[in-house]
Image 1 (cartoon, rainbow, N blue to C red):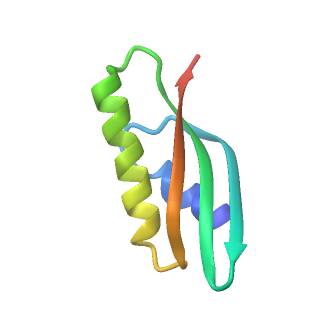
Image 2: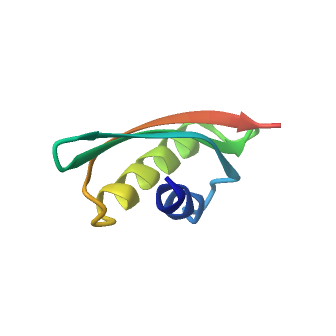
Length: 75
């Protein structure tokens, strides 16, 4: 979980990581993560950040096969 949080927090536009859950099925990992972004950000930009987080985590070679990203406004 610490590695997942670290990778996701380094994506440009991510303010912080709130919740993060990693589930294992066989040798594969599935991630649910809540990503905090600027509350004034457009939906389009926040959506792209979500895709960037997912892409970075899947490409990390940690065995992550799917990521569900929840975008949350940073207060």
